[in-house]
Image (cartoon, rainbow, N blue to C red; front, side, top):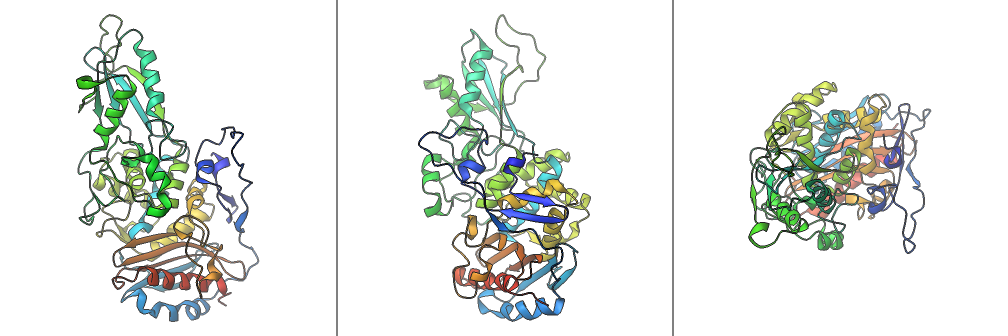
Length: 474
């Protein structure tokens, strides 16, 4: 299952984590030959070793002594719900509000990752198609829900499917028939384009977007600038309010249309099976198709950079796989179904979206630790793919700049986790190897943190997980 990009090796019930290479390499097409002027990235090096089968298991009293005093930090606010478990045994080692519904913010993406990998599999690819329209020369661009689709080689996401490749297929399929207009079909995703419970500034705030079955570059208006400024802007980018029409206009230009002919409207692709008119393809005839990177890569990108648009698109893939509407509500319902199929307590999760932007989302810390454990215990190998994109403390992704202050450095390199942040909400959930070599899973969710304490609250969370890394907790 695309072992070349699996960054988590499952060895029985054990795990071995390696540092990811550069995004363009480990998320792109692995078979590309480096250019002469490119620096070849060395093979990944170990970050989290596989757990020692003989390592002593921490005790509940030991874990409590290590972390409970730290949970009283005022930066964490009035409610801090926590769960810590042993990955090998699945035994709970600490719980404080562990089963309580808590606002999760972006750690929601762990549930999204597990459910889409279970429902679709790591090698599934999302198609974008072009079919012949009802009128001669009409081309219908049909969105399949690939948020990473690019216009050309200057797209935001490495290894993305490209509209210029699709346009070339269309020109060949049309033969002597000249394209006359482009219609876009984004009907696969029904319902509202913005999530319930999203803060009012999210649609225009640069971190969310209108969720459509057809978009390019996660709806970014300028993918080149967004890629260049990603670190400085923390992922912010201007987004198109109508990403399907923007994609259609780009496709029309690639087909050589201009002026009034380049204007794009929404419609529905005709069903295949009609009669052709002369040499023109029959309405509904597929003229070309491009496919997204495999699901494992989409999950990696979502988790590493906490990409909200990819998260919402992946939840709709879960919905399609479980015969639910590909909407916010349908995605949430389908994720519930899949969690139940995995034997997880679906009654401990209530979702309004899949990215964690919604303040209506609720997840218990214990569900998160159970979810991480089932992904890592070897019982469902396909779920181990979630760990490839998990940021490494002090090293990569959303944890790159963290675990560098007093009381947190013990976690650098040995904590691997997904973070979550909304105003007043801070969360972290993932894996840590103790000083004795035991692999633990943890979730710490604070959803009543004081306003204006972003950096202080993050450091307080990092001190909790670093305490687990520092101790044997016996």
